Image 1 (tube, rainbow, N blue to C red):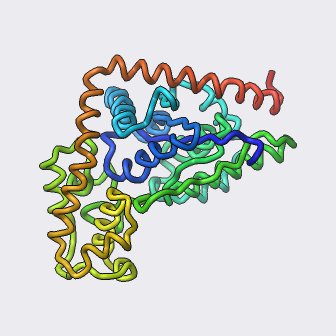
Image 2: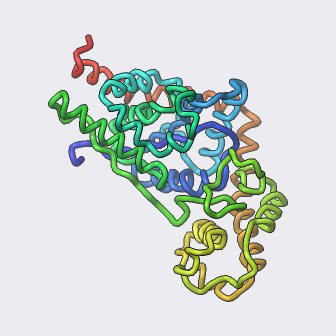
Image 3: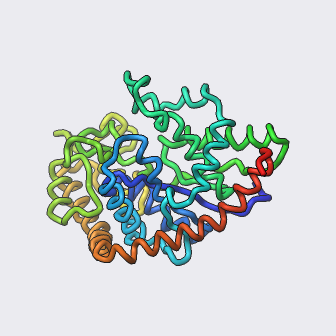
Length: 334
């Protein structure tokens, strides 16, 4: 690892308005990481089409993700933010990795099993092999670090396996083995309606998630209606393990306040949920309000956003192009 320049890569799918889980689990960390690392952030639209998409919505969602990055504090002038499909090196390297990766490795991916369900024979090939494209996303830049949630650890392990096998197969020390970066209390923000399920854009209930474009009233209403129970809030973290909805609310407030769960819990132990919910709604309005305002301002000038993507794609290609050229030499292409 020491011979590789420290570089962070991460991507977010443009599959609808980003929510609180995306912010606390990823984008908030992106802002912090840019203080320490060279960072490359990608709107991964090629991953998005592993399931059916409306083309017009996909284009619109791509700009909304970009606007969310910038509104949250990612500096596009100093870091690289770009659109995956605009940099051909991703899919070109992914084909090489399709030939390095093993079917057995992909069959063990739990996310594929979860998404395919009983319909495994009928889903797109892309849904199965997209971890190979994810590896290409990372390794096209020789990225050394990847911020991941718990649910993405397995995919990062696959990226490391592919890098290692490529290096071994061709007797080179070319690709780094990227390391995971796991930050903060809220790496996994759960549904407001079911504390055992991750907050998701695909959930049927709008009250399961807080969107980054929600109004103050929407935020307050959703938190007020968040699932809880009739008990008083417990006084220690161990008791929270049997109360997933309570744990989720405490977790979110801790992350927004940059405090430990233990410290947050001290303030609410023995109290009713109404106090926690009121304070959480106020904190979320304080955090999300300025981001929402900036997102909406940015979306009023889509030409400028497209220029940012074009500039980012050009910078990304400048890095990925020579790396892919070297890969092609290593495998025996001209």
